[in-house]
Length: 413
Image (cartoon, rainbow, N blue to C red):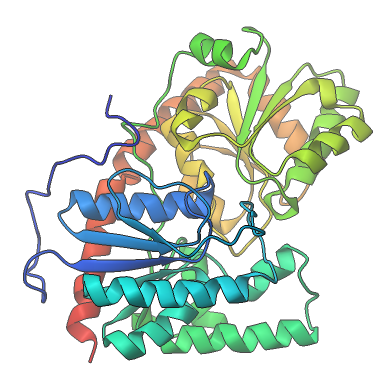
């Protein structure tokens, strides 16, 4: 098996259309986040960069001082800020000065690297990219993973209709208008940009997430359970991702309580961080003995640990963000239960069971029903793996992204 941390040395044998840039395209990626910290946003950044390098392009990432470097991708960091140690997702009042440092670090790197294009992740990255573009005179592509204002509302940073909400919405509109091209991690997000923000059809394109099926694949369940110290024959539901309210973790714990009240012997493996609040909540709900919390999981160990499960769950309730964990579930051949949302439907198709949106009782019903139906689980497991291999390869996505770059370079003034 290819090492997870190794960027393969292969190059595309079919370069496609001629690039307007002679030789490899040089891409400066802006990542205003503590990259790499084993969560969904960071996975997209890394996998896009890795796919591009495998296709013969040059990528350099500029990011915060926190996180770890991933082999094969040159990564530049802002000066260390000793009092800022936040790795979890979510807003912070510290970010403005971190982003100022990121701008100057990126400008320094760019003057040496001389990029052909800026690829900015998240709205903060795009905002910084607008000013970088002024100095560098290169196109700016914005990798949008959901609405800025909707995400801040999801995190409880402000209330809808408040003064802060109106201010950030103005900023979000400014960013959307000033970038050259926007790619989104779901078709639903692309549609929202066109409908709610009146973005022109040609300025927005969906590039949904994907998965490396050589790395994410089914492992023997007994090996996975031994690694985690979990009983071999217990019915096990797995979850991997950030732990917060808009990921639906509160609803997941409520469904655990419902199942245990019904006498259903399901156990839950909840992998991710920050987990302190949910460990306490599990105790308060009386379900702690039915849950194994692991805390933060190294991305390289995720395929093995996911393989411990009989099925997977993603109770995410945010309607504006992608759901990257589902690609990993598919590649590991996991039957999956999710809430019925457009994003989940787009990713999973027929390879999942869909519960009524936001309904903990229906989530519990479907988890129990699928766990009891061995034949249905086997059918979904086979379909999931096939779908990951045939439809959700990062090699394919990398080639799509390369074509988007070429279009951006050809059409930019």
